[in-house]
Image (cartoon, rainbow, N blue to C red; front, side, top):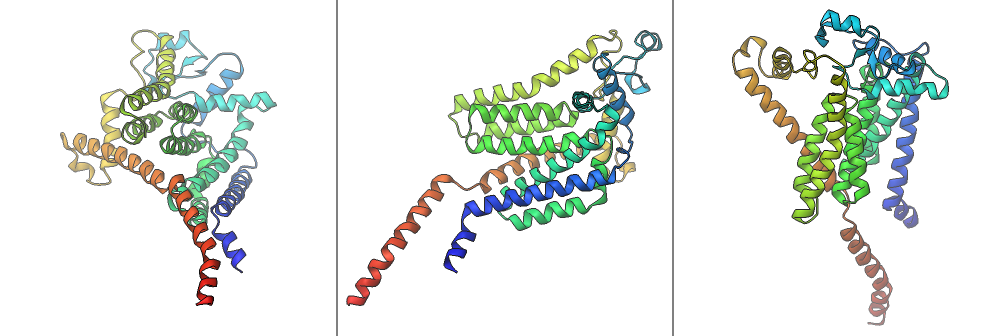
Amino acid sequence: MQRATDWLSDPRTRIVAGWLVAIALAVTAALIVRGSTPTGSFGATDSQTYLSVAQNLTEGRGLTSSFTNEYDGVVPVDAVARSGRQALLLWPPLYPAALAAGTLVGSDPDHTTAPLGALGAAATALLAMRLVQRLTGSVVLSAAIVVLYLANIWSVLLFATVSSEVLYVPLLLAATLALVRALDAPTVWRLTAYAALAAATALTRYTGASLVLAGAVALAIWLPLPARRRWIAVGATTAAATIPLAVWTLWSRAGTSGRNRSIGWYDKGDDVRAFLALPTEWVLPPEDLSGARGWVLGALLVVAAVVAAVGWVTTARRAAIDPAASGFVDAEARAVRAAGPVLAEANARD
């Protein structure tokens, strides 16, 4: 009985159990999503854009779209000149590139969407399980949270749709885990892994840039290095995570005329105000957002989101077991066990 108790309380047992449960949930998630898309993934708002870019890529037209729309702001004469290969101004490239990669195994973009969605669901379940287990230390609670997430029909629909979230969500979780590991024990490889995953997240959805910002703040505050080395590491890591997005932004606009290059990234004032008004409507009715109130409240919510992200990373880091403390406790326990028989014998003699 004691041996079974020791085995169950062994940290290595919890680690193995966590991985086994995570793998089982990942397989379950993949089967649920794949079973929901027997004839292919569902269409969504941006689905045709992603598919057209992927098709152009497979046909040698590069990362371009086969059509343009009013949000691109391309004047008619330029649109005609680039017919069938329009500059991709509002969408990042990684998800359509992943769809086009299916041709490497003989699958066209249309038929790649469903398997990619199943893989995204599996990766999300696995990574979410590992992240929650790191936060709570409980295999049961981690599994319960992931099961509740998968039981939501909207979660399944997310991965059953032609949408960049299929790739964005698992990349976001992977980058967060990589950041936490880098904060625990910074090495060049761990910081490089985080930078690569953060860059990939931002190249999948532009909102991934918020992860780069939160990561820079977390590294600047909690990276356990001397001040000079810490700031060098923060600068190098943040630059590595940001440069790919900056290069893509400049390159995607290089082929357009000067009057079109400023379009994209929701840089029109009306779009920015609408974006900020969306979260503020959770707090104030739309009619109360006149004047500067919407801007101020929106900015406060953005700051709160960054603080929450940094706090999330901090909590995950503190939840990890300190190897030094763990070793001390193990040594103390071994000493007590070794002293037990000696004390018992001494008591018997008395």
